[in-house]
Length: 366
Image (cartoon, rainbow, N blue to C red):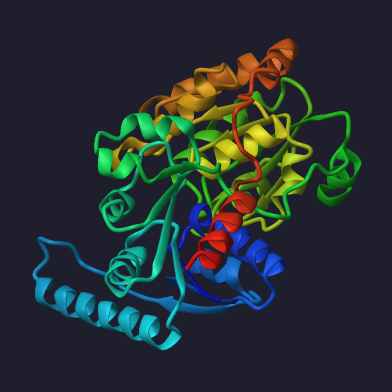
């Protein structure tokens, strides 16, 4: 069996795809697996040394209103031809799409070639690419039950299977002592984890360091700050200039279990993977949804916000509201425990197994 996995170059798409691929290979060692994704710092970091064959694609467009539209069209055609060439050479029996425009051509072409196809939607609301592919894919796996309620097309809803989100196989609850040793932290002090998604968030980075500068005297705080590659220098410089703050800065952290196992509070965007990971480790959070891309992250954040497991802030307010909420949560020791007890109980944390089993069963019935 040959399986092609396609995903955009973000951790939220690549990590779930990798989890399914690895479990599939474990269950069916004869499977041949090929990864198709875009090339950037995040995808290169995640897939560096990957046990599967990986094809990286590059496509940069200036936009529809650019003077270089004709150049962009030529690039798109060449990009499309390269995908078709890879697809024809590999000749997969199954194509699994995890979102992004890199999945579009393989899934559509797979439909017309009679290849089994499945797409996975990570977010509560389906993205543009997956919504388009809903008409072509044989099956649509979703991370959240409410996704089906938000789709009006019966042609799409009848294909939906609730599988949950495939989590990284490395995610496990470590002993707090182990994480404390890794970060060289004090076990007794409160730890704040700052995330901006796999690429980081400049807005969160800047709002947080502005807020924490005035909060550092409240009590002893420890900070794990995952800045993204672009802001690493700026964030590190801030902490160098504030030596009273105990902080560890990473542009990207592969083993997030170490951070999650010691975090008492998380400041983060609200990608689907983050919602699942926070729920798995039961970490109270201040969620700051990415306000663009049709505000998908607001719907994700509501999963925890409605359960009162997280506080949701709008990006345009964080320069003053983040400090207020941090101060409130740090002062009130009981509120964090209340938030920790409010996480949803209906999420499937075995999404990788569910998807691998679907692929194997479909292959048997082909």
